[in-house]
Structure formats: structure tokens, C-alpha cells
Image 1 (tube, rainbow, N blue to C red):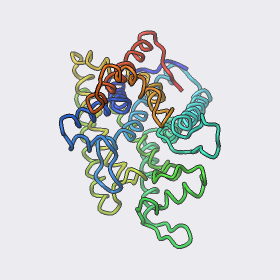
Image 2: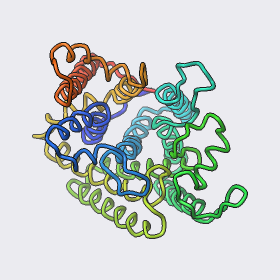
Image 3: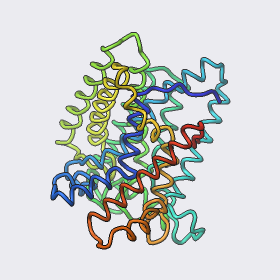
Image 4: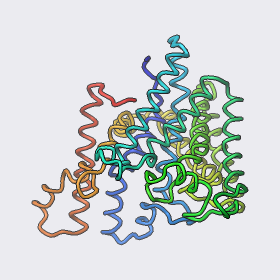
Length: 369
């Protein structure tokens, strides 16, 4: 496959997202506890069902959005190098399969080799596989009009299904309760004992994953229009504001709930994604003098899957190997346990991860699926 053309803003935003997920949030959380900043700590954990979204709730939607934003660059590169549709289709199938498998490894207890303790469909990587499949087929088989129609169809159909379709023996449509809604009913029915027991949904919610990824595709198309200059910034901001308004208005009918990716949640979160990409576009694309500041973020962004797998795959006592790699050193240096020791450990883990990714980056070694 040909090398994908890179965009600094997209790589940097991907890096910021993975940095936040793989240790940055833990560092901020420890600092907030030491300084007594409870409001910051609240933004570093998931919101309860139906509560306003937090910064932590935007991590997964931003991943899906960035995947979509990078796709126009990748598919343009394939066309420039005369890659056939069959080759692209094979890459799509292979990538979706590997992402789904990695998702089971990271969060589905695949490594346990015990079917009784496995979860089939329960991870961000698997949501990315779904969103990528829908968006890539739209890019492969149609133009911008097809992509727009599919995005609107996914949003509308998912909204209508959750809002109006009854399910089970006597459950009416329109329920948005943690363990009583159409999406969770379908997950439990189809996955059976392999459903992970959480209120997060994945099967019917693939419509939302596809729509969010396609919204990212539209952002990537805006960035590819280099002739637009500063108008691309205005376009990103304008679309972002419109999505925020649409999501807020729809929330009066359908609540913003991340666990089941309601349509209002997709619009609201994508609005923030557009605005974040606009900020990074302003800093790193339109002002080349600041581009050097994006380098540490690109180190994380260009090996995002490896960083995610290293830091999220559970090991002993439910922690990943990487979460505990600095614990023996910190325990030896810091006599008393507490928030200071946790902060030092978090910073140490993050620095070691960066050094590993930097070593691989310098040698052109990237984990890609």
C-alpha cells in the first residue's frame, strides 16, 4: 500500500487525544487532587448517565472523528498511485478485522482464552472498525453527496429507532434508561453471555459510529482544499458551531447520552471535534512557525494504536503493564504513599511511553493495521 500523506493538524490532534488517554489525564488528575481542584478532576472521568458530557467523554468520539478526517488524504493517495479498488477493499477488510481483534485483546479478555470470561464487542477499537467500514465504503463507492446522504441516514435512522420502536415483551419505544433502551436490548439479545454487562452499546450504535466518522471525513475534505486558505478555518468553525446548535436543540427531544451514542450526542460531540481541529489547524497548518511545537504530539499520533494497546490492555489486578512500569522505582524513592507518589508514577510512565514512541518514530517504525 502507498504511504499516506500526512496532515500536521490531524496528526497533532490524534496525538493530543492519545496522550490524554494514555497518561496525560492521569497526570492532570493527580495534580488536581494535590491542588484541590475538584472541578478539574470531574472533567477527567466519565459523566453519569444523562449528565453533561465531560472532557473525558470526548476522547472516544474524537478518535472516530480523527479516523474520518485522515481518510480523504489516504484515499487521495491511493488514487494518485493507481491502487485498484480490489486492493483498497482488501485493506478495508483487513483493517476492520484487525481492529476488532485488537479490541477483544484490549478489553474483551481474548488473552485469557476462557470463553466464559470473554466479551465479544466492547471496545473503542471495534467502534472505530465499524465507523471506518461505513465511511470507507462511502469514499470508495460514492462522492461527497453519497457521504452526506449516508451520514444523515445513519443519524436519522438511529434516532427514529431509539425514539419509536418498541422491543422485548412490553417495552415501549423512546426509553433512554441505563439498562432499558433498544440499543442495549439488541446487544444483550445478540451477544448473550458475551455482553460485558455495562450500559455501553455497540451493535445498533454502529450507525452513530459511522455518522461520526463521516463527519470527520467532511472535516478532512475541508483541510484538503488547500486553495481555501484561511476560509478552511472559518468552514471548520462554522460547521462545528452548527453541530453544537443542532445537538443542543435535539437534546430537548433525545437526551445527550454517550453510553448509547444518541444522535444528539453525536452532533454535540462532533461540534467540539470540529472546533478542536480548527484550533490545531490554526496553530500548526496556517502558522508554520508553530509547527515545531506539534512534534511531540505527532510522536504520539503516528503510533496511536501501539500506545493505546500498551496502556489499555489489562494485566495483573486489572492494570495494564504500562501503568505499573514505574511503580517499583517510585516506591523506592518516595517513602510515603499518597498523591505525590501517584503523580510521580504517572509522569514517569508517560515519559517512558514517549521515549519508546520517539525511538520508534525516529526509525520509521509504526504499528498500522
